[in-house]
Amino acid sequence: MNDASPGWPVHGAALTSWVRLWPPAASAQAGTVDGIFVALLVFCGAIFLLVVGLLVVFSIRYRRGSRAKRGMLPEVLTRDIEIGWYAVVTFLAVFMFGWAGATQLTLDAPPPGALEIHVVAKQWMWKAEHPNGAREINELHIPRGEPVRLVMTSQDVIHSFFVPAFRRKQDVLPGRFTEMWFTPTEEGEFHLLCAEFCGTSHARMGGRVVVMAPEAYAAWVAAQPQGDTLARQGEALFNAYGCSGCHATSSSVHAPRLAGLYGRPVQLADGRTVRADDAYLRDSILQPRRDVVAGFQPIMPSFAGVIDDGELQAIIAYLRSLRPEEAR
Picture 1 (cartoon, rainbow, N blue to C red):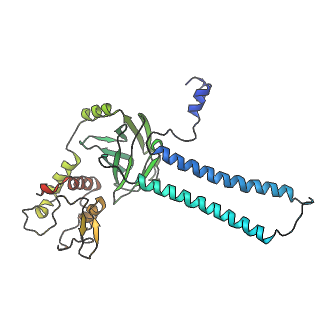
Picture 2 (picture 1 turned 135 degrees about the horizontal axis):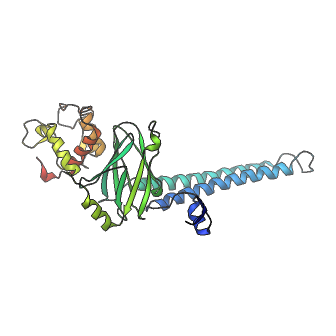
Picture 3 (picture 1 turned 135 degrees about the vertical axis):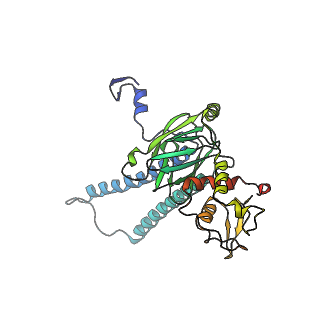
């Protein structure tokens, strides 16, 4: 940027890049979100201009002392105007609601095989762990063109993971898992923000998302110090906390088998059927007496206050990795 003085561009091209209505679109989802936002602006702007325009016209035409004809409008005309106005506005509102709702439902469902990265929020940092065990703080390196699924939780208060260039934002809550996915389309560095006031140093809780070419990302991952994968860490914790003593195939304790459980329907003792997703596994560990599996006694102790959120993520990653043939 060529500047006559610091911060002030002088060329037209520089002015275009300096003045932005919103951040650059750097994900496959950004265009859809921008389309809904622009449509809402047009819809609201049209109503605003119509109301203000009528207000100005009527104020001039029917000002005190003008010779404009006054009196009641015909009832038929009044009724038709009201019905037409409410019908048009209702149709547009329902259309916008349906469009935005359908889009949100689509954005909530990640495609199969998306790159899964686990994120833990903590005052005042974002901690990310990649599938091979590589870790980073306040940074997130991801490959361009590949769907990325973030599984997130908080160790303290409510945070909100926000990448403006991706048009994606998701609250990160203590005591539960939340998910967000996106497909980055542009390489470069993009702001990572916390969009929920989380304490005195909330403004400092930021970082960057680095989108790399797929081959560059593979080289970056290979160069990082690697420990055990999250699933391997979870297996070690699963054994260390004594879980295998009851859930192993050879155990004398009558407990549900966990191999191949993830994603399957589970019949509960109260007649309900639930899906064994991340939330169910978390609740089963922290509140085991709430959703007791049919045919089993509620003898499992609660691990609330014993296992922290990071360890819980690892154990659930291990349970997700189990296949039916891997029963222990």
